[in-house]
Image (cartoon, rainbow, N blue to C red; front, side, top):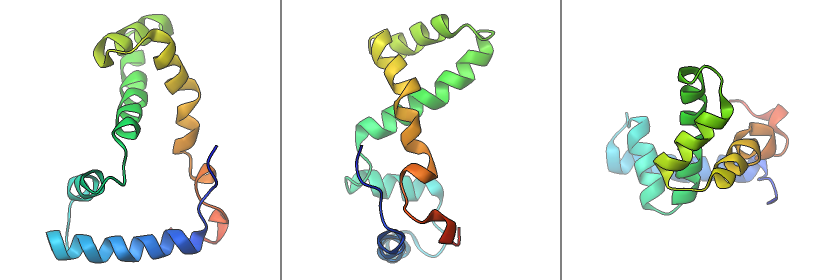
Length: 112
């Protein structure tokens, strides 16, 4: 697993990004503007976006499939053209990377 970011680095990154985005989109950018900007600059890798979508859609489809995990994994593998094993790995292992504690050191001191 990669090292977590220091809070100081995260805050510096936010300042730089805030400046770039306000210059490009004005004082009130939408979340779509921000995500697009990050993706366009290569700061969000395509695989990260795909994995996030898989995890989000998995839990939505799980409700539709009445909690049948196997059927839901098969649906996701078809939709994203991945093997069932790849989808399972993303669901069970990769989603840990989306937790705050996994990404920022000293998060207790964070104002957000």
